Image (cartoon, rainbow, N blue to C red; front, side, top):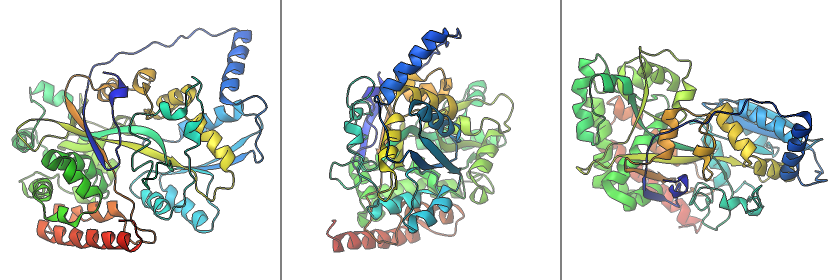
Length: 475
């Protein structure tokens, strides 16, 4: 099935059948072109990327990017290609795992970078703040521009993405955040261990909890997660909400309906977390105090049977120590019913241009360039990422692993993709929805908070968020 059949993010949430499948790899042509052929190819590339005579009033662009699992090499490389194709331009790159700390003072001072890619649990609150304060540039016109193929850029993006609340957050049909890499998330396991021991990956949560016996037999805990960053648990919680309560429950969750926290869906889904925390050896010892790389390394070393993560997992941990014979296996998220419909969370990362950017003209040109075929391939080669564009997995399959390609292609397993994002809170609100929902989970995992205490806390938070939205006429 074509990647075009994926529906990525929807306004609140979308469910659809998504295939998972097998793979191949193209061999690149190693022969060098002649000097004249190379010159001609360069000229053609420049012509398609930059109209003849295109100049910019301000040729210098300042960009800030998150340096996480995807690294920074792609950004350095694509910036160099852009400057080559746009002679006279200069791109300055600031990259850091804690990019928010570096750009926040500039944003507060009214002097933000011209272009930003913000990701990571510690950094996204600043992006949420820009959305909340309506401090992002309208990018709709960029996606109306024609691409190398002569069709509008918006036709190149995966269906449903540009209309999603993560990209068009105000429900007015305008695009304020540009899609970057497309991720698929869920639970992972050691495929070699399961194959060798003839263990079947669980399709229901009952089967997963039954695997605690398997875990003990193999001297490991059932589960671990990125303890200091409980937001990673979103990758199993959102699909579990969909499994337990369908689209209606997802709408309640993402649109701040306080009654969600009194619902059977809440009790079922958060009950899974409580069961992991209370099940004998269910949660790997010390998990709550570990950061993402520490917990992921422990999983690779055979200290737990399952861990949540996304399609960047393999590349992010490519140099980490692991148990002999380890192979990445992607499970998805088991079903809460007897139907055995395994699910996965899909998400698109975002790039933005601040409304107060000093050089929006060049920033828009750079943004459009990122969707060129050259850039898409470069992103896969350098960052092992797959951009949210039609046909990207096949375009870049020589650069990504077989496991990653299989997940993206999704052809015969009947896996269900789930996606969604929190509605923006009111301008000036103190609440960050993701932090409010996920950070207290550590208290459940450490048995310091009961499910009733958690639901009472979140009921009050959602009620207050709704009141703020109503006071501003947004509800």
